[in-house]
Image (cartoon, rainbow, N blue to C red; front, side, top):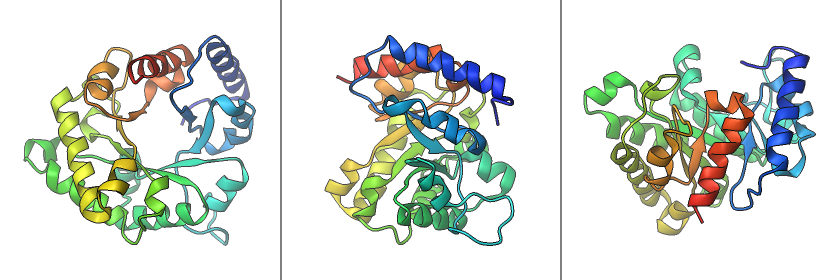
Length: 245
């Protein structure tokens, strides 16, 4: 819930254009997910950055005051949509069934869902990470076909690291990646499982990206606070671009 005015937005867009103008980021995909009211303005960034939304409702249209439908997003140039973010789960009590319904609706409208999964600190300390992530992935992907999985991205987002100044160790991120990949193999087979991009999200900075993404062999990152600073955002992208070759 940032960029609170047209002035802030204009400043951000000018800075991100400037940063991208001097960088050659040919080997990665950049996606920005601004608040709904800024989607049209961000479309003007062009082909260097793809557009995503922070959430979506499950119905295409109707009397659902205040909600944004997947069809709206698709018609306003969105390609991606974040679903199941830890803040949606925490503050709006979204459960795995609701998240599944949103994913199915997004896929029906040719959007690419970025499914967020992850454990709380209490669940981590109680050694329930495996159980929690397994349940989240399986329930969120209920009735999602193998062919549809090619358009799904999964972000491991440990809730205890989101918005905090801590990050998991490299081996913890690797364990989560291997777990998610194993779940996908069980559900869809090896070929489909290997095609799904798995990201890391939670306190991603220029100082942590090596440990939580590159050394952990993740396919990318879901950046939070640092995305508000175009220089830092592009610098993280540059580090991944250079080290993933």
